[in-house]
Image 1 (spheres, rainbow, N blue to C red):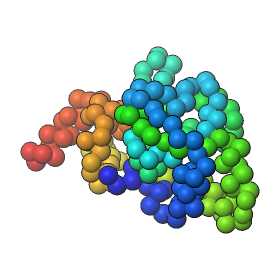
Image 2: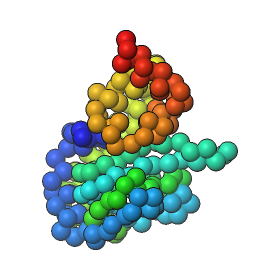
Image 3: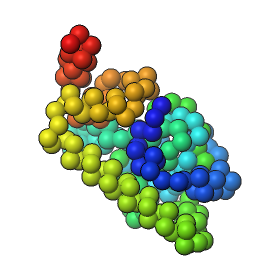
Image 4: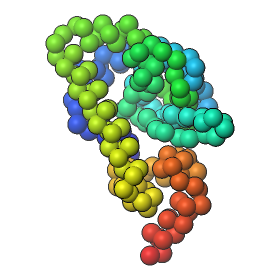
Length: 189
């Protein structure tokens, strides 16, 4: 599958990935296990060698909203909780059996401090994450649900084989019924 999180396509991450694979603790997560839970501090960041995770936000009425995913060859972390070392506001949950190599906050900070090149890479990652999040926010407003779904399929054509249509609808902030209607319109013209 193409990278779900597009920032990965714009950066040379091999030094960071190598660091995770050489120094990270190999951990296995079963489907449904949490990498980090809401109200807990996210103490680790991990490189996903196999599997995937979803980021789930519970609103004030306890309704679930899928706000993101991380798949193979990506990183899993509650970025705000990890960088600020404050309680997370989302749940980060394995969507299938997953193998990751995880580093603690201090281990990653040591990597960034090891060289100016590493610091530059960290800055570039943060910039790209911000731009990706900003684009996603902007795309919610002028684009119809159909356009958002088509954009998602363009970026990640195999996404429908990775997660349920109900979760795709939640991620796109539309109802499953609306997504079914859009899929019928696209298929049958």
